[in-house]
Image 1 (cartoon, rainbow, N blue to C red):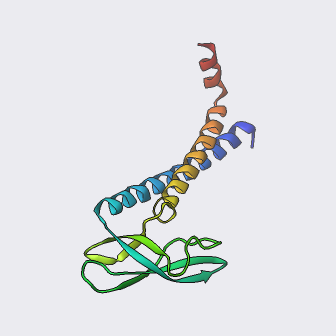
Image 2 (image 1 turned 60 degrees about the vertical axis):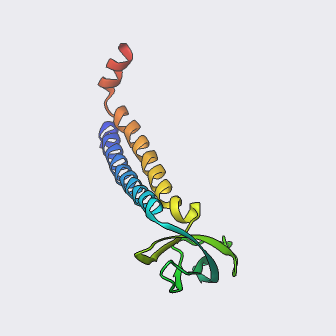
Amino acid sequence: MDDTNFLRLFGSIFAGIGSIFAVIGIIIGLNTRSFVATSVKTSGTVTDLIRRSKVYYPVVKFTPSSGDPTTFEANSGSNPPAFKKDQQVEVLYHPQEPNSARISSWLDLWFLPVMFTAMGSLFVLIGGIALINSFPQLLRLWRDK
């Protein structure tokens, strides 16, 4: 395989995978934005920290507007733990679906969409540069202008 074919294959794969990751990140971000815009804020209490593979996930108890106390485990965890037991946290939830609750923090809401979009964009950039470099005749035409 010569260098041109390698660059085209490498660039296509990287740009393709990057596009998928970027689109996934954008979709997750739009869903998160919609969730934040339509949710209700309340306060909750961290009742426990569940350890899984050296990562601590907070368990939060809150009382939605329906009056029935609800407990949920956060989707994201950290090590060291981002929260302490008995710590008060802001909770977002949909009134019709209290089990959809999430802690109102950047990590819980925005880390995943930002990571996917940034990583995907970087892959697209790397793949795009490889693809552009695989067409030397186009580079010469562009440089001669």
